[in-house]
Length: 410
Ligand SMILES: Cc1cc2nc3c(=O)[nH]c(=O)nc-3n(C[C@H](O)[C@H](O)[C@H](O)COP(=O)(O)OP(=O)(O)OC[C@H]3O[C@@H](n4cnc5c(N)ncnc54)[C@H](O)[C@@H]3O)c2cc1C
Image (cartoon, rainbow, N blue to C red; front, top):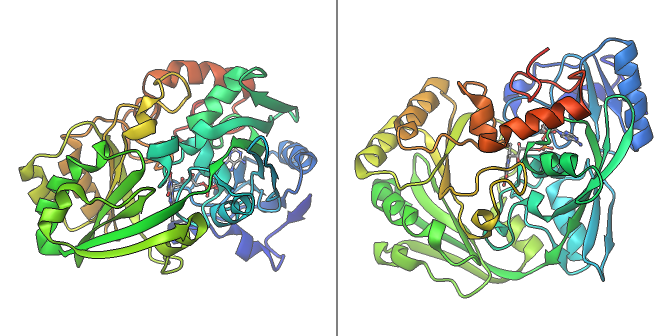
C-alpha cells in the first residue's frame, strides 16, 4: 500500500472527485490499494490513527460519499479485467472505469449492461444498481453480478455469491456502496457485445412539452432492445439512445424531429459516440426521483418554466421483471427516472418540488440526495429492514458510515 499525504505531488490529482462541487473536501491521507492485502493494511492504519475511512472507485458520487477528511482508499490501481470466454464470466477489479470495462470485454465479444459516463467506476455503479443502454434488455449492472470479494472493517476477506455469504451478496446488489466493506473485485455474467444503432432526435426547446408527453407514454413500454432517454436543456429537446433492432421512433415520428442515426456500431463505438464533449467542469446541483405514472400537462408546463436541465431515463423492460426482494435494489415497478440539474441549487429544488407531487417517492441509490426526509425508505423501500440487519452483521462497529448510511452517522 502506498500512503500519500498532502505534501506528495500526486495528492492533488488523486483527491479530486469527478464533481468539482466537492473539490474542497480534502482527505488527511490517501491509501493507494492494489490488492486486498493493501486494503487490509489501510483499514488497520485508519483504525490505529483513529481516522474515518471511505473507499473511492471512480469518484463520481453525487453526495461526496467517496470524499473524506480522513483516509481515502483509492482503489484505482485495482483495475485488472480478466475473462473466461466459454463461461462468459468477467472478473473486474473494483478500481476499473466503464470505458476500459467496455473495451476489455469487447475483445472477447462480450459486454455488460452498464452506464454511460466513461470514467464512472464499475464498483460504485454496480453496488448502487447500474442503469444503462442495455438495461431494458439485460437488467441492472448489479443483476449480472455473480460474485464479489469484500474486505470487512476487521480485515476479514469474504467471497460472496448466491451460496456463500448470500445475505451480503444480496445487499451488495443495490445498497453496497461504502456500506458493508471494501469490494476489491466483482465477477459478472457477461452478455454478447452487440452491434447497434445510435439515434438522436432533436427539436427546438419550444416543442419540449409535446415531446415529453409523447416520450413518457412510449419509451417505458418500448421493446426491450430499445432505450430512449430524453433531455431538455436551454436550447433543445433531444431523445437519444440505442437500439439493437431496426430503429422505430414510435409516436415521436409524427412530431417531425431532426433525425441523426448511426447504424452498425460496435458497442464500444456506440458508447463513445454518446459521450462526446469531455469532462464537465461546471458546478452542477441535481435532484431526482422515480415515477410510476406520466406527468400531467400542467406539471410539464410548470417544469419547463422552472429553467433546469431535465433528464428522463426509461425503466420497464427487464429492470421491472426482477422481483422487488430478489436483490437490494427495490425499484422494480417504476416507469422512469427524472433528474433536475443546473448551477442554481434553488432552481433545482423548485423544479424537483413541482415533479415531486407526482413522483413515487423512490430514489435511485446511485443518485443520492442529502435533502431527503426519509432517505432509507426512498432508497431501499421494503428492503430497508433486511439491509439494516445485514449492516449490523457485517459492519457492527459502523466503520463505513456517511449521513444517510444504513448504520447512520457516527
Ligand atoms: C458523469 C456521471 C455519469 C453517470 N452516468 C451514470 C449512468 O449512466 N448510469 C448510472 O446508473 N449511474 C450513472 N452515474 C451515477 C453513478 O452510478 C454513481 O455516481 C456511482 O456511485 C459512481 O461510482 P464511482 O465508483 O464512480 O463513484 P465513487 O464516488 O468512487 O463511489 C460511489 C460510492 O460507492 C462507494 N464505493 C466505491 N468503490 C467501492 C468499493 N470498491 N467497495 C465499497 N464501496 C465502494 C463509495 O465509497 C461511495 O459511497 C453517473 C454519475 C456521473 C457523475
